[in-house]
Amino acid sequence: MLRLLDGIDSGDITATCVLVLADNADAAGLTLAAKRGVEALAVPRADYADKAAWERALHAALETHGVTLVALAGFMRVLSADFCARWHGAMLNIHPSLLPRHKGLDTHQRALDAGDAHAGCSVHFVTAELDGGPVIAQSAVAVRCDDSADTLGARVLDREHVIYPLVVGWVASGRIALQPDGVLFDATKLTEPKRV
Image (tube, rainbow, N blue to C red; front, side, top):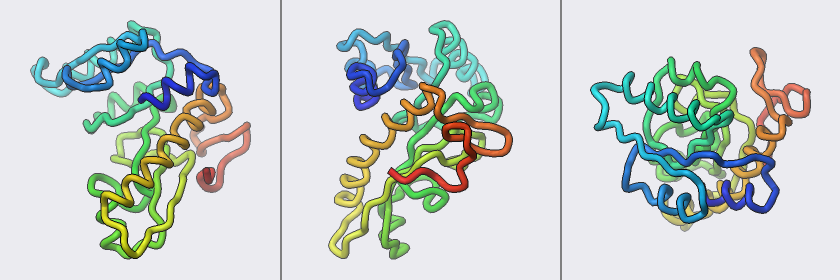
């Protein structure tokens, strides 16, 4: 989140952050955003009778604030198909693996256990399939023989801080769009994710 705000502040991302939204009132990002003058709002899941009511509250908050692009960052909730459909083509996520490999959790350890030569991160459009939306861009790092999940994860995180602001900037400026037949980059269909 901070890297995205930095990109907006520097002008690298042509957008305005109108809201930082969390499902946890204690999320550090809310305090950090507020210190930068960005409205910060918690919508805790526990405050709602069910997931559908909670997602309606999320959607209402986004609409009320005029959000046109959602960039998930550390948001560890699985969103319903209905919510994803409402934000189809306007919701991004970053995942710490080279999708489609290692969807879900524990990606760095799973890459080590699989004997992968490379690990990395992927920025994708969010769909109802967990970590299964169309991938826009990826950044890879070599897996070292002495890596642990922590050391590998630290190098991947460094790449996340580069790739996510870049892709958010592309989407915000209209260079990237999700069409029924795939992802367009500068009006040309991507046949594979951009490598960053």
